[in-house]
Image 1 (cartoon, rainbow, N blue to C red):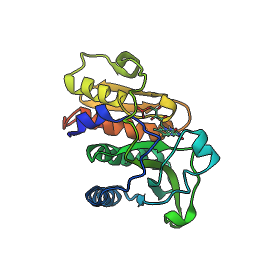
Image 2: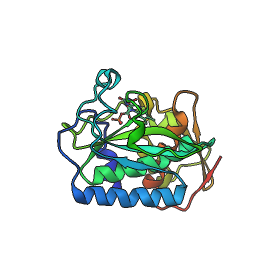
Image 3: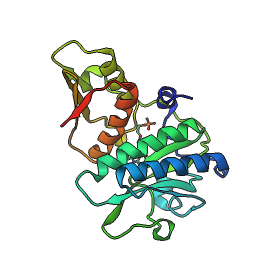
Image 4: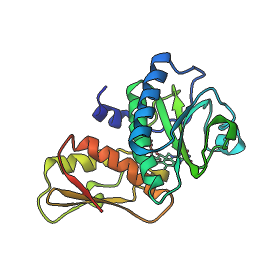
Length: 222
Ligand SMILES: Cc1cc2nc3c(=O)[nH]c(=O)nc-3n(C[C@H](O)[C@H](O)[C@H](O)COP(=O)(O)O)c2cc1C
């Protein structure tokens, strides 16, 4: 499965089968986590066979069941930690989809089990991503229109259109899709709107945009 297909087929899944992660999938994920940590300076960790985080009233209220594996997105406290976690976390989400796994970003409905991962001095746990073999594949989310999130004074080239379409497939907190992409020449700015977790969402949609724009040498500007 290529990344485009992974973006199309990925939907949040909250109910999981009682089935351990396959060995090959674990190895591939661990390798990618290492690569992401090296590139970003994050301290991402794969937590496996840990049922407590999703065993609370909140988790069940949030309709989660069978979650025993998750990715803990941890990094040094800084202004851009949320966006960086969004970007690299979504890289892992799409890889998981390619490996036949399902995922769900989770900001709220879980408990922090301190013994399950390491948070070094100056770091914080930003968010987790539930991971496993879903009972279903989830369903496509309602989406804003292309025109609501894409701006340009000139004609839009295909790579920009494809980037924005890919961003509209991305998960965002409460499906808020509070982002706008603006094209100027070969420069793209991606701006987050006001609200909860919009910086995290921004990192996620920027990764989707890059995948959709398929190697076009555009430049991100702020
Ligand atoms: C940053 C972020 C935080 C999220 N937090 C939660 C959460 O706490 N509980 C939950 O059930 N879903 C959570 N989600 C999943 C979103 O509700 C979901 O991505 C959105 O409704 C779009 O649906 P889709 O992922 O199926 O495309 C979160 C998603 C993101 C990106």
